[in-house]
Length: 541
Image (cartoon, rainbow, N blue to C red; front, side, top):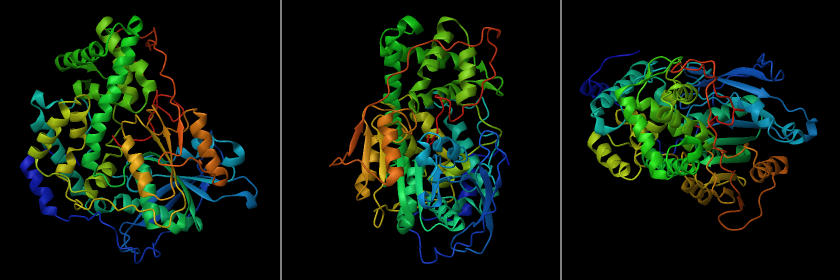
C-alpha cells in the first residue's frame, strides 16, 4: 500500500516493529526436515522451447518451523536428453539480483554450450521466494519508481524528500509483509535450493550463479557442502564485505567505467561531436542532466517525465555492459547537437523505465538490509557518501538513495554480517571475474578464491561485462564447458589459474530512431531479452 508518512513517524513505525534478524551462522540442527512439498511438472507452453516444464514447490516461510506456514517457489526445467548413464544431474541457475528471475536461464544457457554437454544436465531455473512468479510476489509500493523522482544530487536540496520516501518505503514493507521479510535472506534462499534438490530426488546438485547468485551459491555450499557436485560463480560478491561497503566499492568502479566511456566517446568525436577529450564528454553529460532539471523530457510510452534521476538511471547500466555505449553517446549527441530527445526517451524505456510494480526491490532490500548492520542515522551516510562523491560523482548519490531504505529497515543483522564462507568440504569451485566489473568489483573474486580452498579463478584482464560468460569469448566459455563436461579445471598455479583477453570496444555509431517518428516523440522500445547484446543479466545495483 502507498502511504504519505513523515520521516519521524516512519522511523517510529519501524522501530516499534523491532525484530532484528541476525545474519550470523544459522542453526543447522534441523536442516534435513525442510517440510517442502513435491513437484508436479507440466508443460510451460513455451512455443520457443516446447520441452520446457514448469512447477510450483511449497517451502516453509521459516525453516526453524518447517511444517508451519508455506509459500510457493516457481521453477522450470529443461530435462536432460542424453542416455541415462551419461546424465549428470540437475544444475540450478541464478542470475543475481537479489531477486531476479531465473526462469529464462535453462533455455538460454543450455543453448550457449555444445549439445553433447548441455544434454547431460537437467537445467533448473527458479524465481526466488517472494519474487516474480513465485507466490506471493511481494509488493511494498507499486509506485516507488514512478517518474519523475526527486533529484539524486544532495546539492539540489532533495535529501529530505528522499529520506521521507525511503522511510515510507521501509514502513510500507513492514506493515504489509512483516511475516515474510525477515525470511528473505540469502540463507533462506539457499535453504530453498536444498528444498528444490530434495524435491528433485537428487543427492547432489550442480550450480551456476552470477552477481548476487555467487553469494547465494557460496552460502549454499557453506550450509550443504556434501550436496554440491560442481559449482560455477561468475562476477563475484566478496564473501566478507558488508553490503554498505560493497556499494562504496561499486561507486568507485562505476566512476572508472564512466571515465572509460567518456574516453571512448572522445575518440569518436567525428561521430558524436561531444569533444575530443574525456573531460569534454563528461561536461556534455552534466549539461544534459542540468538541462533536464529545468525541462524534463517526455518519457512516453512510459508514464511521467525524464528528469535528472531518470537520466542517471538510464546511464549507469553502461557500467554493466559496454555494448550500451553507442546508444549512450547517441543520447548526448542528439540532445546537445540536434536538440532531439527521442534517443533519450528510447534509452530510458529500454534500460530504466519501471514495471507495473516495484519489481524485485523488496527482495533486494530484504536480503541486503537484513544481512548487515547498516548505519541508522543520516549524518553518517551524508558524511561517508560525500567523501566518496568527491572522487566518484557519477554514481555515488544514485546508489546511496537506491539503498537508503536500509537506514530504516526493521529487520537488521549484526556486525558479524553474512554467513562466513570457508569452503570446508566443498569440491573445487570454478570462479570467473573481470578486472573492470563495476557491479561486483575485482576484489570480490580474489576474496572468494582465497575463501574457497581448491577453487580456480579465471580472470578476464581488462574485461568489464557484469557476468562475463556467454558473450562469445571462447577462452571463457570453453573453460566453463570443459568443467561441465567432466570436471576439468584450469591447471594454472597461483592465485589466478587462467587469464582471458577482453572483448573489443564497440564500434562508434549513431543509434538513430526510426525516421518515421516525429521529432520529440518517443519510440516504443522493445524490452531487453537475454539474447539482446545490450541486456544486463545480473543486478546488484
